[in-house]
Length: 195
Ligand code: GLV
Ligand code: MN
Image (cartoon, helix red, strand yellow):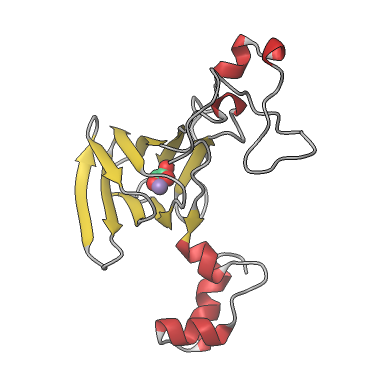
């Protein structure tokens, strides 16, 4: 979904004082092999959180060599029963492959049609750009997946956090009306997210 590159590479200068839409390139003469290799997905993510899952991202912010190349990856670790909660990516479609365990992968279209399947190691999925999706660990042990995106910075809006843990908060009247529940339900949900 990103624009095509206009040169071989453009290693991001994340510290540049100005950027219009994306990041400027550091000088070609300053690029080294280290700019094009990244070790950040080799480590297991810490799944000790309310969801029991952790997304570790290799995008332009963590791996500046991806700048302008229109792609990025995540590693997603799942504790037993862990959920990568419903979320969506404004700037990319997503594909993924299960490396370990068993995952229920689902997405919902703009017409509220739900598609899903349980996948095990080696099996793959695709999430069309911008659609709400999740992965739930339905296996007996831990699970692991790698995902790939057609953007160097897909963005991720996590619905429960977007709606119930924003800064400042989305007003109670909006959430009670949207979900047809009382304020105590909204506050109960918020408290689980430390709000
Ligand atoms: C999984 O949905 C991911 O965004 O990595
Ligand atoms: Mn995703």
